[in-house]
Length: 78
Image 1: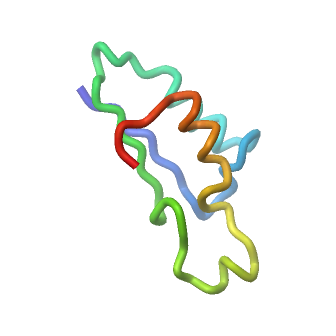
Image 2 (image 1 turned 60 degrees about the vertical axis):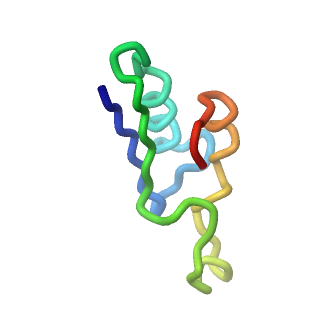
């Protein structure tokens, strides 16, 4: 009934990375007839980080990488 796809936002998940390919595979191989609930979760809140370090040092968090996954696999909830 449920399929969970989990990302570690502490590691690179930009397009082409190993983790991106894992997420893409997880999303692409779900059988929505058997698992109508597809749930994606990540370590940090998607969309921003309130930690100044990420702004200075750069990070792999959102929005990097998310747009193509949303476009290709759609979403019901942001």
